[in-house]
Image 1 (cartoon, one colour):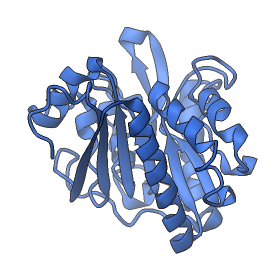
Image 2 (tube, one colour):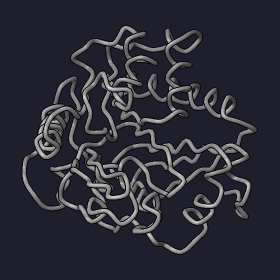
Image 3 (cartoon, helix red, strand yellow):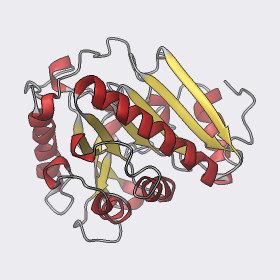
Length: 275
């Protein structure tokens, strides 16, 4: 058992990630403000339920401008004071290989928008150390997850190797990537580790990221997707053929959890199915 009574997953996927999970919901909003208001409301409710049921709420954060707006909402009334932040454990879905004070750091953004503004104990924040050598940082974060969730250590796709977050927040890029799972990159093949380094040739950079099997163990995964530049990839991800090497967001399919797509009308404009 890990800190605050976190337990390792009992929801390990035996099916490949392209198989549909038991629950997918799509919600549509006029714009990003309405989307984030509903996301904040739902996150507060999930946090309260999780804390009441198990004494903690484990949340993996995403980078990007849309979640930044969500974090700003959560850091202020009426959301800030609705649950016990001392029972919240913060993790990250991915990180750029930069220091924590770098403008590109996901941790820096989350800290400025949310983490520094709520009564969250510093020991509850588990960041990826992007300033360290990438392989070392990925291995260290895997060990951090082992400690926090009371995981077994080992290789291979085993339930003992993967955490089970209560909620993972994700975005989707115009190329169909999510977290730092980019089209055609090596991390898309990873099945045995919860965290890996991913070299992204078109960006000429390395990223640290949760892997698809780790994401798929979450109790809930929420995609927050806005903007007309997402309309074309979104219809291919949700309605097209299964091509995860081209559209990595297709790998996300919680096997025993809930997948929620929260979309503004600009992003959803080309969808032909609304469920």
